[in-house]
Length: 323
Ligand SMILES: NC(=O)c1ccc[n+]([C@@H]2O[C@H](COP(=O)([O-])OP(=O)(O)OC[C@H]3O[C@@H](n4cnc5c(N)ncnc54)[C@H](O)[C@@H]3O)[C@@H](O)[C@H]2O)c1
Image 1 (tube, rainbow, N blue to C red):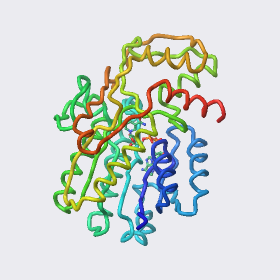
Image 2 (image 1 turned 60 degrees about the horizontal axis):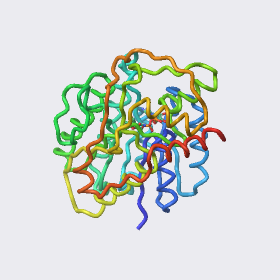
Image 3 (image 1 turned 90 degrees about the vertical axis):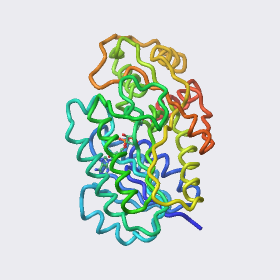
Image 4 (image 1 turned 90 degrees about the horizontal axis):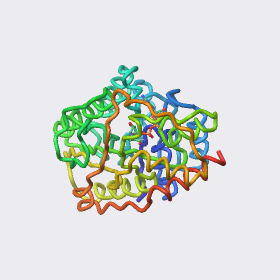
């Protein structure tokens, strides 16, 4: 039987890719996005144009904090069996100067969504986006069942809050709420505020790349197709099992940690460009290292990561040049 999926943030980077992949499988997708101006709206509109070509896609340009949206969504309440909640305010550094938007768009918007679905009989699972940044400054290679109580940005505190609120709703209403801690997701149609994309934009404008923390950062770079593949494995797991009242969080990131300077060298090789570089200090809120520990997740969901950095950047750059 076809699945009816609600994807919030469907014009965002990850939301767009997951929506497209579910539409291609023949599933019915309801997308919602407020198309906000955190980054260039054109890329969000262009992603949306692609999704609108599918007959099984229905879109609402709406804000999750707007009660009117839920009035419209009510018609589909008893059909939706999966929710993938990706709408929200992303970005660690932006949360230093704009903390309030993280409370509104991450915490409050999530509570509104949960309030809408709390009595659903049809809902099998609601997945929501958390982040590797919940592990704080010394969080490298932490397993998803270790405690997270030392956030260093409001962004990360907002994601921890969402995880905690999930415990409450899942307990009271007996629903399955699964948080996914994504690790630096990259790929075609990516986010212009993220380093791999920003570096190419800076270079295009003949500006030197600003390399934070004097190049000492390390990240688990995760290619978008690997995220989509593993996300659908996790959805299938919860759809098949007759579970109720589960509240869990999982790491979803490539195990391989890459040093920022190695990342830049790979980007230079792939693009055949020698970047001008400006080394600057660590930015507030940035964690020095992220490293995905996915032992538990590999056993449970059989996760696989098939793209190495070079391969992923080749695909990203091919898209970037033609966009
Ligand atoms: N991309 C990554 O590397 C990464 C890493 C960790 C966590 N995450 C999280 O995953 C989620 C998706 O990330 P992304 O990279 O696709 O970000 P994105 O900014 O591209 O997508 C988020 C989308 O949500 C929409 N949105 C924001 N607030 C909304 C609201 N109140 N109502 C309706 N729509 C709203 C935005 O317009 C945007 O299109 C975010 O929650 C982000 O924090 C992403």
